[in-house]
Length: 186
Image 1 (cartoon, rainbow, N blue to C red):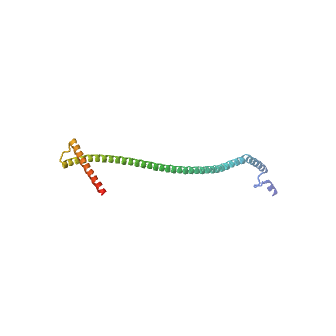
Image 2: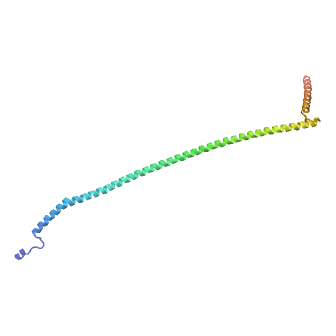
Image 3: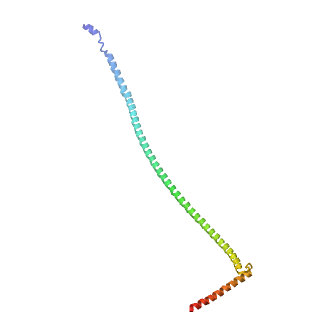
């Protein structure tokens, strides 16, 4: 049995030459993988990690920038609102000032119109008074002419009548003063 055992190779054990060639091929393959493939994988992994970390940093930077832009926008918006409120207040003040000026102008115009109206009324009144005096004078002369019995249409006659009337009045006043003086002495 030993001959049979020596002659028949163990099917589970490969031949020694194959083991040596397998070990050399494995060592070469291990060397190539360790020297070329593993560093390349490490480089790819590192680049990927840096890209991811860089992307996160860029995203954080962009988020911070967006936040700063939002704050700047809000500040500009608040400033614009304040400016709009100031412009609105200024416009209201200017409008109020314009209204006051227009009121003052209207009051001045009204006062001027009233003064002109009063002047016209005074002039019209004076004109009416003068006309009435003339008419009253003419009526008085006509009435006096009827009372006296003479026509006073002529200037000379009228002057004579007026002179006679004044003389009579002077005579009445002169005797009246004497009578008053005589009564005062008693």
